[in-house]
Image (cartoon, rainbow, N blue to C red; front, side):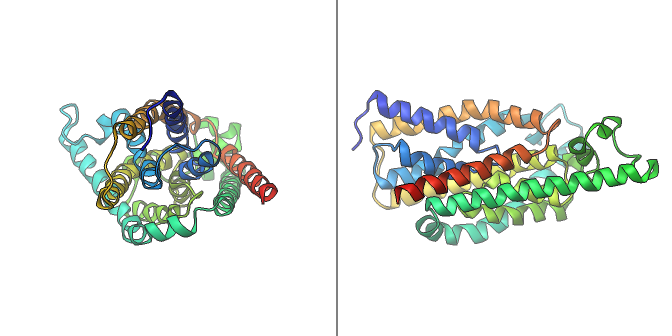
Length: 309
């Protein structure tokens, strides 16, 4: 049983900070948490750690519920009847898009945890999806600039500022510019991309954002829908992990409860800032910096563990 001391509380705060930042940026929160465990391990049982790794996400997802409460609230008196209907439609798309991840991810949850949690798998996923971000953004920019060069008739829908750079041009060229324009087909397609995130190091937000970009969404729409998809996914995953934890005969000691609460509260506060940052960032920049970060981190992880081995 864990003794409650300031060191463990500080560790829980650190984990909350890492979770709050990496859950929403497309850099893999689980990958970062597993890597952090290599250097700053909590003094807890293996069962508690496995549960903590997932349930700490509840703090992060509550930040989405707070920041997007109006957009997600179908009962808001400030919305017209048509807007409330649109909100219900959005929720239906979110739930439907989560079905593939639930159908495929739940049966494979234990197997993935046992076989694909190694640092090398995480590093490979970090690098692979980092390369994907860079290639996709480059392709989108080339396509947008080619349209702009072809003449006004091909680029008349672009904002005037889009000509200032490839990154802005690519976003202005995206077919889906608002969450209201998201079709059922695109929503389900993004949901299928979410299945890829069952591999540690992939990043749930990274896989769904990539899916959104490939299916014609602007960066802001891809990021926003990713936040919404996280709500049922994280609540479901956390509930499942808690059930497994208690079915094994475990119970929370006072110290463990404190560690979990501190981690969740920290993740909530940090997530508020991380989400605001990302939504502001994607309005002016592309996702390539995250791609380069993933590649650099993946290479560093491989080098570090190769030296240890």
